[in-house]
Image 1 (cartoon, one colour):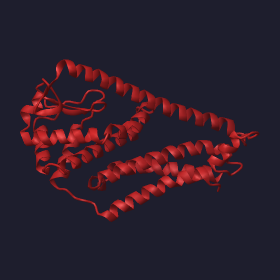
Image 2 (cartoon, helix red, strand yellow; image 1 turned 180 degrees about the horizontal axis):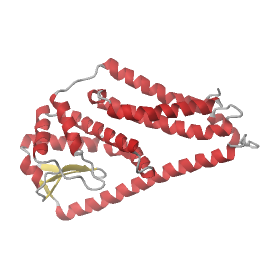
Image 3 (cartoon, one colour; image 1 turned 90 degrees about the vertical axis):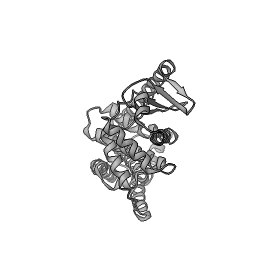
Image 4 (cartoon, helix red, strand yellow; image 1 turned 30 degrees about the horizontal axis):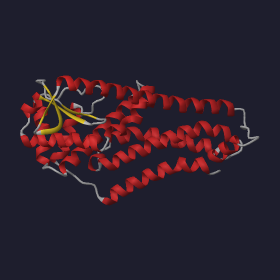
Length: 299
């Protein structure tokens, strides 16, 4: 029964940590480290939930899950305890549901992007001065990227009129950072969870927090190549113009509510110390190693 208790405690801790992490202020000083923390938290939660289900199968024998599963797969191995059949069925159903939701999200994103890419070939045009950028004839300022192969940056004519050459270079560099670092893939596990639990306020808050961190990571990548002021002025111009239109399905762009937080961060940059980054990463590694060790070790 000790495995059940440990997995239950880890699961409760993960769920309790979601909202404080989503609202934490320190993440703006080290967005890449915060993203790693989110990924470690998500994987810890997944493993703890899976372990909690399967631990009921081997609780009477007090086995680790990997030794127990190996014994179950061997000749003559049978699950012990009255809850074992139901636990195995529930664990298999959970794995199937997670795999199916992830497959559906990937399918829908690929379909939306393929359709939008085809639409761009009909209505957008490229410019020699902006290689890899598609320009849409639309008066409202819009800037987003379309992940995939090939990845595209899309700007509206309204954005071109709004931005000067320096601001335009900063916006394009920001969007290309999203494509280069494949930020769309970071969101996939959360989007798959949202497909299973579309009305979960906790998931909505988590997606918004991770999206903001991804925008900050792209901001940092842009500012390593171009002056910080160029990107700040570009964001200010978008804000003064009333924001941007939402990206199409499959596209990747910041929400208007994120622009204010990004601008404030760029105007008053604060870097975290190496000690703070290391401490956060160590804490994330310890949290993740706990369910991993419980899968193998008897207690």
